Image 1 (cartoon, protein in one colour):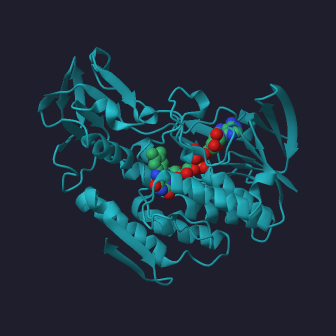
Image 2 (tube, protein in one colour; image 1 turned 90 degrees about the vertical axis):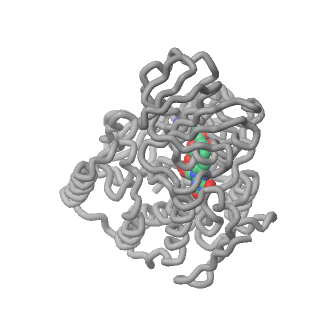
Length: 413
Ligand SMILES: Cc1cc2nc3c(=O)[nH]c(=O)nc-3n(C[C@H](O)[C@H](O)[C@H](O)COP(=O)(O)OP(=O)(O)OC[C@H]3O[C@@H](n4cnc5c(N)ncnc54)[C@H](O)[C@@H]3O)c2cc1C
């Protein structure tokens, strides 16, 4: 059995390591020259398919216990629970070295097409250094190509009339270009809040416009939270509370597209409005051909879930456990869609599990017949969400430590 792994960011690395652990032969294709995916900081912004949302000052928004792969400890030198992105790269590199993951990776290899033919996966790969194409055959495919390289722009009436700089968070790198400016940040998700606060350090004023949720406390003196941005008339921004403000620059922190240009229709996967990938069982298995899986589609959580998903896939692939029948998986997928439709959630929330995330971890453990994820880890996540909701500016002042499977310590530094 030989599988292909597409992409070598955090999800690809977890997948290679789990494949090696299960003695499954694997070849990982990475189109860039390095591992790490979005954690590999690139100063340039005009990166095409290698588009990268990492910015200079970024510190993690999840504490280190949630960013570990299995029992490979993440202990940043800074001692912070929310380390700088360079320390995440160091961790990923140490993980790749420790498990000899580099030996399975083909760098500068871009996957151009994946087809399903005669019970096999045919993958067309371009060597970006020699420009040569190859077609290779595999028994399984793990899609680990990330979903933070193609910006999702909102449609706001009058956007085109704005005279100042307008960028997407994908292209945000450093705050210095916003010195003494008035800046509108559209979107109050993790990126919007973080970038807003980063810019507030040098800007005259930052307005963060939210569509659904606002934090209770404003994150800095010169930051104002405003409801939805309704329209733009030259430099004047109109908000849903009927207020308006003049600004010098706009940053759209409005999310990213799920982008899989290489999936041939024979794969049996449909990508709806660049936001919903279907039909998938447990947000990862291609229901029509479960030897294909997607790692890391779920939002707000990463490494601990990548590792679990990769382990569950390996257990199914090697037939240590059985997936339900196609009919049962389709039924489960349809129930999930109905539940989302009832809650009237926009499609951009399809992979956002909110309170159901804990159940999701338990469901995956059940599919893979694994021990449930220690409650302490998921309770840390709950605590992070509650701190962010109360006072975003305090998050990185906290230190988190796991005590045992159930308990964790959280104290202000
Ligand atoms: C601004 C921002 C901050 C974040 N902060 C945190 C945080 O603090 N903590 C946390 O846990 N999570 C955070 N996340 C979430 C993020 O999901 C993960 O941290 C994670 O690193 C993503 O890993 P990935 O492997 O899925 O994708 P990526 O890191 O995007 O890696 C995908 C890789 O696939 C390669 N690739 C793509 N297409 C092809 C192709 N066709 N052929 C070959 N290779 C290909 C790319 O070159 C890339 O190297 C953040 C996300 C964003 C956007």
